[in-house]
Image (cartoon, rainbow, N blue to C red):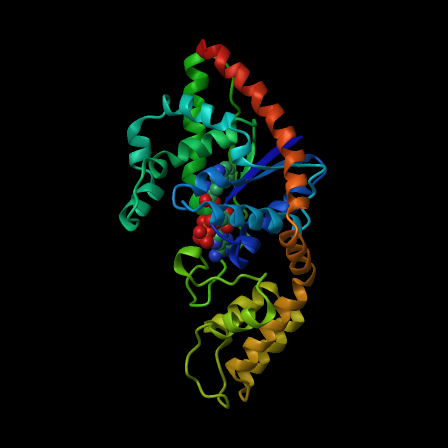
Length: 323
Ligand code: ADP
Ligand code: TRP
């Protein structure tokens, strides 16, 4: 049995990029009978930037509702909030004392973010140590993540290996990043990588009218309606082709090439496809967000399972450390 683990930071509602790039592939992986998956909501990580309590509660519910809306099987697997297993904070402290300062100071993500953000707090600096604790607390073997997270997994391996080596025992499993090469970078409404930070994201759970407005805001060029257009350089087509069937893609491609087909038409078709394709997750998401007691119940069941694993591992760690 392989143990798979991944987390999504709860700093907003997951967007189409998060869903196609992280949620859907991770759920697919969790369906393999030999795998056991631990999927969690990284709410402690969200504190680095999100300080408002009600925003946090909303984001946590929203990330949890997204996993369930896409049918994550919580009975077979383990679904939890990071903060509900505070053992992870204790392990983070121990790991901090095995993490060389330059490893953190030279991390790409820290260098990049510390230049851009106004609030460069110590949480941002030690973020990879909390992430390492998230992983090795549960003996996770495979970590499905985007390419931007590879360095964090390598740091996790280095920290875990340093610890194992110091005590001459295999206390921690060394995890491997699982990068799905077939998953593309989903472009946003402006053609750049879809990201919360660029404010170019599509939230597929929005009410229809608001969602249509977002789709209409996708940036296109000014080629007049009657002229032929290049589908491959168009943001609308590039998003459409990630979710449409091959015959739908072919049809839209032909429409672009033959002319007399405007970007407005393409946007309406994309909007209709999103509504149709995600009809079931949209309904489930709304139901879960309207009454969060179901979410709470599912999470609490998962948290009991996660806690058991965490407590056993910490017992081992405290023993070797002499605490
Ligand atoms: P954001 O850039 O919006 O802050 P995160 O960094 O929180 O997104 O990403 C959460 C997960 O979603 C990661 O696994 C990441 O690789 C994936 N992801 C984010 N944006 C995209 C995208 N545009 N295309 C594919 N995957 C993405
Ligand atoms: N750092 C991840 C992200 O921003 C979220 C995360 C936190 C995570 N802890 C993790 C992912 C452990 C995988 C494993 O996307």
